[in-house]
Image 1 (cartoon, rainbow, N blue to C red):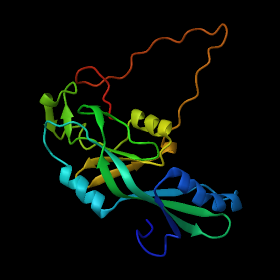
Image 2 (image 1 turned 90 degrees about the horizontal axis):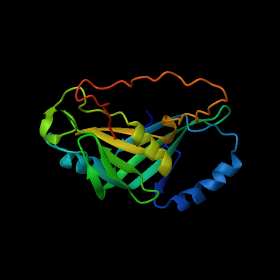
Image 3 (image 1 turned 45 degrees about the horizontal axis):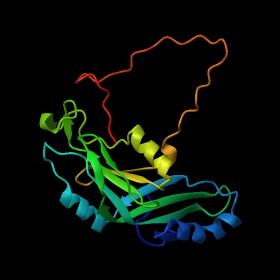
Length: 215
């Protein structure tokens, strides 16, 4: 991983407005159209944001997911090579988060939206729950501390076109995820005369008969 501070990061742009970011990057994109896309992306939650999120984290058995807006962040570019083949890495830093307005929340889901251009962060709980009921949860278990973004997380990120999303899955553990972590499958077009495929039963969880989901 490249150093988090110092000369190894060639340039860094504080994220204030998407339009400003585009304007600042435009000259570099124009003069280097053949440059390869960012090869590796790193994400770091910096001290102030980390301390705030650590303070609000809880190991309570009865809890629901929480949501935040990333109101202070930056992108750093680390030039791995300066001659062909060009390789650049990205470093995303989160400096400041603010609680989001939540419409509804459960043990494995939270419904919220941050303003356009403001990345989102949400928690995954340290519990495993029967039928998604906070009254039927235990600390730990197979669903606890999951840092994997769900299909809903990735589809929402793609729809919003945010630069990244973040999951907090333990007091000091964060997972960054990105739009191209998910490729939406192409639509299936029925062919004339094609027979209908046999129906199948989706995999279900052993508890309650519903698929385990996180979002």
